[in-house]
Length: 160
View 1 (cartoon, one colour):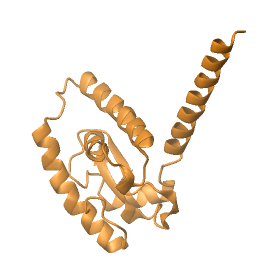
View 2 (cartoon, one colour; view 1 turned 30 degrees about the vertical axis):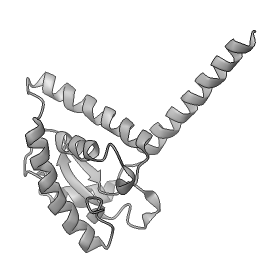
View 3 (cartoon, one colour; view 1 turned 180 degrees about the vertical axis):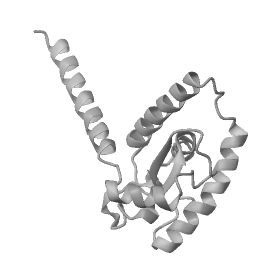
View 4 (cartoon, one colour; view 1 turned 90 degrees about the vertical axis):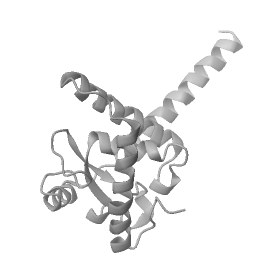
């Protein structure tokens, strides 16, 4: 084998290992079942952001870092629609550190959530959310997340 081919194989292996590391980290970022049940019950099975239930609902972490001491605390979670979850992660695209993620992790999460949102929209003949609607959601999220962070004693990712 020539050296160029060996270098390409090595690069592919590194890229695969990095991707698997990101996927593995994100896959591990689920609330334990009991915590998810508390979050869902607290929300009365409605989005805590818009009180909707006409889309898939998800338990989203406010801060995804596992080393915080409050990673699995129900106050570190918000029950929201898939679209709202996407808007939350997209808001932190340029700097995901406040939500406890690297850029690669957040980009991967955005891609996966967007796939789910797009699939639902196609299946149910829905239009994508407008930028104006997304910004209105961010305003609501800032209040909800700020309140939860205050009660939890954790940093608010929306504050500088």
